[in-house]
Length: 425
Image 1 (tube, rainbow, N blue to C red):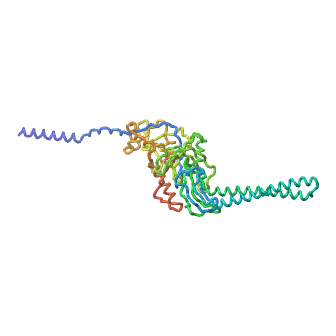
Image 2 (cartoon, rainbow, N blue to C red; image 1 turned 90 degrees about the vertical axis):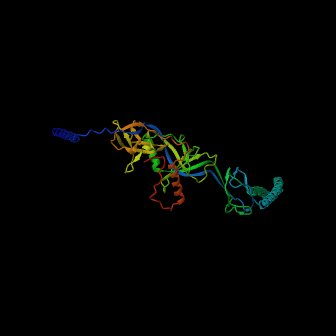
């Protein structure tokens, strides 16, 4: 019996010890590991500032071929859409009436020249007789007047011949400039008139090609103010570079030259016209195409380039980034952007040299978190000439608005695509 009581007591003591150990303090959990984020360290960079402007292409030379004499078109001597040379004959108008008119003018000239020869001889004879008082002074004066009238008739006859010759030449309708001829507006057998200047065809020189774009006067004013205050360095008109974005979002292979910027602001649109000249040997550009021109207008020597992956927007629409401070803590930072360059945002305010901007791992951090910093692994840039989604969207928006016309209503639910570069927010 005693042995059973002792084992019962030992069992109770063991149970009591287990209960006391369970009621004690639990061991502290291991410290949480810091999240790893990818960062880029920004430094001031000289960045060219572009204005991306929308506009249309137009031919370098446009010549409308119109009838300059009346008549029936006998034949057409060109292929529609072909390249023609200056002076090449395009149409032949029936020349028969103008040949007859030329012959009539030549006959009248011959009659006037014969009369002039008679009057010259009579005047010479009267001059001798009047000195000998064989004829009166009045008769001599009449001979002088007749000779002068005969000379005037000869001059008028020569002018009539020249006019008839010119009209006959107009029956050969030639190309006034070298270029590409369009659709023929008349066919053989059609009657054309000089009085109404019948349009027969149009010849356009497509190499080089003009690009006319519009820039708001506000953007131009801001640009000039930034240059005056030293935030931008002007490259000069001779150094201005213009690149072209086509309707499919691809960059045009040739660079253009800035020709001029208009000095008058359109009172209805508040914009000015900027014209550039582009080579077009391959006939890629056609008159009337919608394009976007990137005009380099200066250089910002104190800008920062931040990958687009690292730029977000708050509820107020303000662009912002997350930076890692000296204590490796995450801190939000509002920034001021000025368009894009490739895959990077151009930041002109809100960052300092040496700031570490988070571009990878943004979805798992919040302000105040302690993070582990690593160099960001960024995707390679797209190949040159690859289409940009933003640019293609912008071109589609511009083309849709133009095709819709001025009476089309805007859709408030579809925001307009922002340009890929410019003065920014």
